[in-house]
Length: 152
Image 1: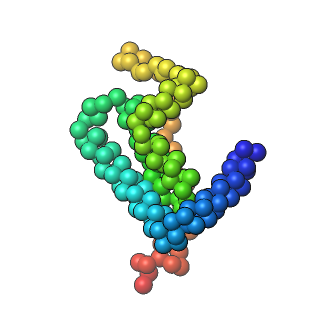
Image 2: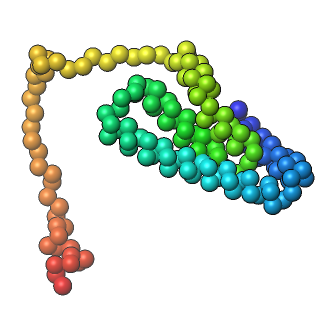
Image 3: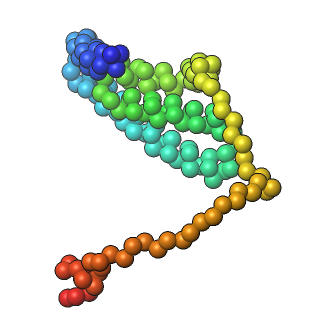
């Protein structure tokens, strides 16, 4: 139900904000702000891709968890900025603030569970039997098909 409410309420809020901002700033300025927000979102997404590649090539010198969280916040912020509307733009800009990111990571971490996984070691041996099976032969193999390019 909350998701349905979000899909109904968000467009209505955005329309109301378009009208309010448009009446104060004018139509062209309002449209320019929306376009600039979308361009900023695209720039953030492109920058995030370049940042991720640089970090992977550099050996990921920071904590992988914080890198992933920062990347997720930047991607979400970029998407919110691309969406037309002042509320989504505001939420996207707020997600770029490092203090807000840290607070959200702490809040999510407090509710998330941690699962440890045992890794394989050299003395771990799994015994079993196996059988190699060839895939069944296609009765209408390439040599029997009408659309075989080798036949022309």
